[in-house]
Structure formats: structure tokens, C-alpha cells
Amino acid sequence: MGKSKEQDICIQMLISEIITLIVKNKNKNIEEAYKFFYKTDLAHKIEDIETGYYLEGASYLYELLISELN
Image (cartoon, rainbow, N blue to C red; front, side, top):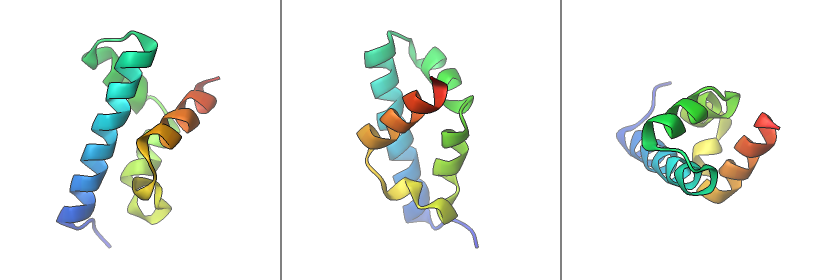
């Protein structure tokens, strides 16, 4: 089952919010933040609609991302 247009928009907005948190909290530029984000397992889970992660809040997922990297 593929992603609907609405799901894809939600995912992209969520990723954008997480990237903003990374830029703000980790003092990275946009490019570094995307690299930081996409090297995590969580990044791939967010894009997989079967996990349901795309329905979670950006702050919560940011904390999971930081936990994963520690």
C-alpha cells in the first residue's frame, strides 16, 4: 500500500519541523541537519506509513532521534 498525497504531505511537514529542531538545538545548518536526520533509523521509520510514526509530534520524534544517537 502506497502513501496517499495527504500522508506524504504530513511526513514532509513533520520532517521539516524535526529539521528545524535539529538546526536550533544542535547548532547545525540545514544541510548538516538533513544529513544528521537521514543517518538515523528513525528517519526511515517516519517515512514508512506502516509504523504510524508520521502521526506523532515533531518534539516527541526529535527526542527519540536524540535517544537513538546517544
